[in-house]
Amino acid sequence: MNLLLPILAILPGLLISYFIFRVDKYEREPFVPLALCFAIGALLTIPAIQFEKWTLTHIGTHDPKGFFETFWLSFIVVALPEEFLKYGALRGGVFPRRFFNEPLDGIVYAVLIGMGFAAMENLAYADRFGIDTMLLRTFTAVPAHLVFAIVQGYYTGLAKFNPARRRRLLWQGFGLSVLLHGIYDFLIFQDWSDWLFVVATLALYMCLFFCVSLIREHLHNSPFRKNNTI
Image (cartoon, rainbow, N blue to C red; front, side, top):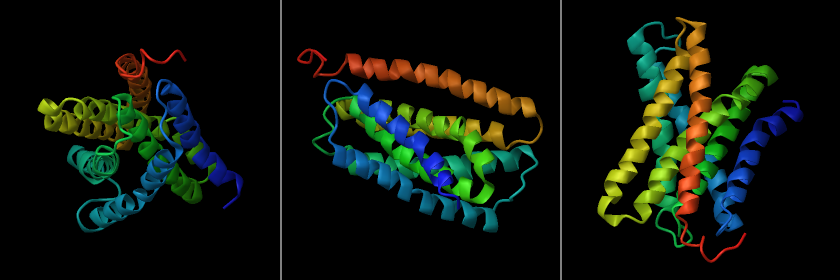
């Protein structure tokens, strides 16, 4: 593989990770947990890809044409296991830790996990399909993983500080991330109309705009806000 390809494949995820780190302006997270989350997200691509390959070989189809096949591939083969793996890393590896001490941390760590996943996935596509596909994914799949992560992290941040509704909020975040991921993939995987690909891209960036308000809400509700003049 050309040395430029892996750099370009990983760079968008790293830049987004740095951006979300800078957004967390009232009580920034330590470097080691952030780096570990990025690395864990990258490693999660291995079981995700293996599961998808196994499912497509034994159950699914590589070239879905009908509604049911496209739905199966989008929601069950791809969206559900990928979001479950990322949710498991966030819930089991980050949620109980002391450094998770404000609602925005849910978004920050979810994004680091998601960007690690997106970077490694992008690297795999760059190796297999070349720079054109990788550049296209930089403006589609990578922002999509950002949206899924922000939504999941938003609800995880709420759940951390709301014990009475914790289970409901956690599953709500997980469920919405699967739903958004599945809908996006469904519109991308279908081969009935090129316009649905355009719809998926436009909807993705509308969701990104909405996600900004979720970040602002958690920033506004930070317990460190009043004592910080940054």
